[in-house]
Length: 244
Image (cartoon, rainbow, N blue to C red; front, top):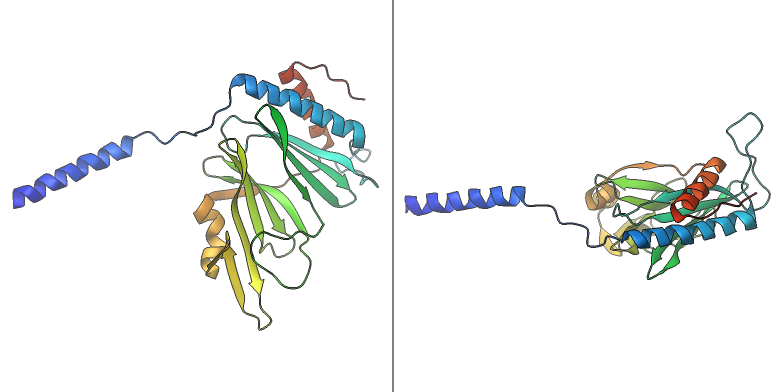
């Protein structure tokens, strides 16, 4: 009996050692080099058209601060590998006064696809929860997890009690996490994660426990970044940059 128990224990130890050295599961999606180049070509044309149509915000003389335009102009651009899988996305922001609109393009099946258009300062209905009263004025930033996967985080201004995390997985744009709440007339609150009712602790800890989020970064006003991304795209796509 003792011998049998010892044998079982040895087997369990060996299995644990095997599992501890097993390679991590690889990402199921990895774009080819030619696909990435085609994506760069498509993004170059998209960004060039956006610049031609809207223009780019200007900096105040002798300052890094921008002059807030009285019509929509580009204020930022970035190439971002959301899923950390080698598949680039194009993010750019347009600015009108204090309002910001965010556009994100991906590339799949031989063409660029508008993944998301997010209008900051406009009312948005979040996908979970049924909060009563007030306006859903919202903003966005970039969150990252411990594996360097990045997410566009859309959040409600002021309280930041409602937010959604978007990213790219297996070549497609997904909602990785959505949080919302319902405030009842009697003051009681129902908390939701991906449409499921949860308690408050689970709700507030969800970005860390569900996604492993370790930090966020702002999306800045930086007109220099717009031209830098356009130049980078032109170089990678083998295009001639022609923007006034």
